[in-house]
Image (tube, rainbow, N blue to C red; front, side):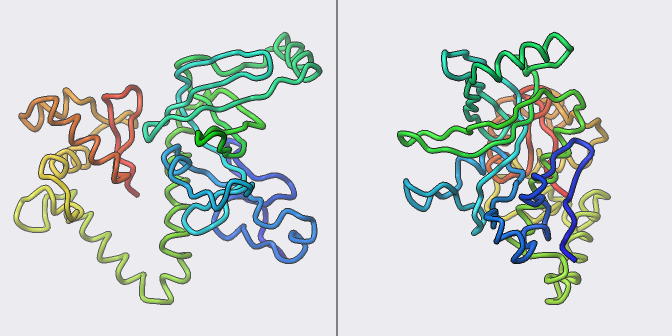
Length: 284
């Protein structure tokens, strides 16, 4: 029996024949390959991953991410700009890790049907609102964009956090291996030790009192370590902490906090939430 299609409460599942994107759902066996889908699965990503994915050659219809083929993708982001042209509508999306253009090509008949749907209450993405995209990454004239098959506004803010966590889980699956493999290789013991370090960081243990002990991050500035520890140890909502709040708690200038945030975002440790100066941890 093949692995069942993975679905979520936000409808972020693969196509009925293409397979889901969660770890373990890639290899449906020869039956899928015979239908011509193969690795044409749906993967949750961040914009930074899209911009950093490798393109094997100009004629390839896929990209490589974490050593695996990536064709169809889904991601979320805030709509910074909407530009309507004769042939397409271009959305500029920002998810805190980067920005990318999303193009929705206009079909006259589909547009007429869409206008009828709008009259029935169907919503479209709006500037400064959040949206989820399904589509394919494209590279045209050395500039990347996503050709969207679907783009819809996000109404539940939990979907944003859910997606970022899910993208992280899938990334770890491909870079660290499936959980079963890690356990078979003794990874469970190492994972327990790492979890204990995090627990010590929360409680102020771990010795030395240095905020860097939270994760013992190597090659990271002291300011970034302090900001990371502040975010981890301060009670907060899903929105995280604002730069001014962090600066006040640490007794530093807000410019130092923003510099540290750039460092942590580059490491994939934090992401922006309600605005560009409010961060939450992307650490599970």
